[in-house]
Length: 530
Ligand SMILES: *[C@@H]1O[C@H](CO)[C@@H](O)[C@H](O)[C@H]1NC(C)=O
Ligand SMILES: *[C@@H]1O[C@H](CO)[C@@H](O)[C@H](O)[C@H]1NC(C)=O
Ligand SMILES: *[C@@H]1O[C@H](CO)[C@@H](O)[C@H](O)[C@H]1NC(C)=O
Ligand SMILES: *[C@@H]1O[C@H](CO)[C@@H](O)[C@H](O)[C@H]1NC(C)=O
Image (cartoon, rainbow, N blue to C red):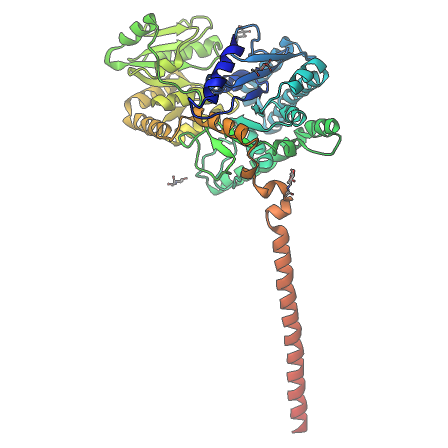
């Protein structure tokens, strides 16, 4: 069925009824969680435009459900991990970030963080192993005539698959730790004086001590990243039979689609093969389900507050839930809270609990006054799209950093999940709802977000099709990739010029010296004669 409509679409395109686009065969590398949610809207648009999309999925995947009917093809491969292995690793990761990280000192924190990252990379090695041992799958891939791989590089190994199939790669990435992948492997410039490292919780306006902090953050994270990537350096070198590195292989990617934009991020230098497509999944609001609409309408002029801590944090300890619930009871707005834990005793009549809420449609509703969020990029982008000010209760990973961005742009206040009291949350909510500056700033970001030549989803699709049309985009690749670090920083040029200056000075000194000697000698001999 799909095949026939594919051929039909191709025919229509081929006849030139629609703007000429090649019908491409796209291979998508496996990814999990919110990364997969971010990929989907692009894949759907690619399918609408007549491309054939195949996703590679390990048998242990939690989020890519191959049994559900989907418009794309799935290519499953067996791996040595089970679903519960993956779930356990993820749960350890979240427990560390949410409950354990704040009780740790810097050394413990770095050690545990390093451990969680190595666990992640070990999982990725298992995926790599699984795929390269599945001969049948490899053969199908080789015969699949793929035009391009579309990849979120947070899950490595796609680089080897692309090398094997000899196809270009388009990356899509929110960020890597301290932007190590983008800077070290993609060669995007990031002066530490005004580009804060991802997850550093700094803004682009840094004091002297913050600049020291940011500088050291880059240096330490780069060292750690390079150390962790050794596993893949070795894996890639062994597989290819020549010395190479993970970073060098990543550097071959043709386009990097970064999932932020200047509404959310601070201005920074970038390269022609880096495109900023933040807000890929944003869509206009649809009408609400009837019961929710009635509840929202019942709020009158006070409006509603939308509250979600994301799909992962949908329960919490009783004590935290009661603190939050009693704060929500003290505002005149009605509150829709996405929460699947036990009903808090202090829950007030203005608050309703839901297992799931149509978040985007609620944020787009004219009665919505504020959004209480954990600060995931997806939720923040929906709030920016609809111009809703935020109260951030960040939990882990990039969330604290994301909320710092929104706060510095005047569209949010930040709460600390562990230490906040009822009064803090009430004050934060009242500030965001009653102080018009928050709404104005949120609306300003929203206007910036919407005022672009092309929707970010279409921009992402454009660059994917561009790479397919031109069989790569190597003309956008900077020569920086082929330079050594001392060439990149012109240290060899400095050394050479310094040597010349030193030589000139030395010769000058010698001449001067001999001159002085001769003059003195002459004057002395003259005076002797006299
Ligand atoms: C689309 O991809 C699938 C899976 O790789 C393949 O079986 C199918 O033949 C492709 N369709 C076309 C029309 O190329
Ligand atoms: C940068 O921060 C300082 C205080 O740290 C502030 O005085 C200054 O106005 C800020 N500059 C800009 C451009 O925001
Ligand atoms: C959240 O729910 C899970 C089971 O659904 C439970 O194991 C976990 O302890 C709960 N977390 C908290 C903080 O209550
Ligand atoms: C630059 O390096 C790439 C591999 O990283 C290589 O394929 C290419 O030939 C090099 N280009 C030049 C001009 O040396």
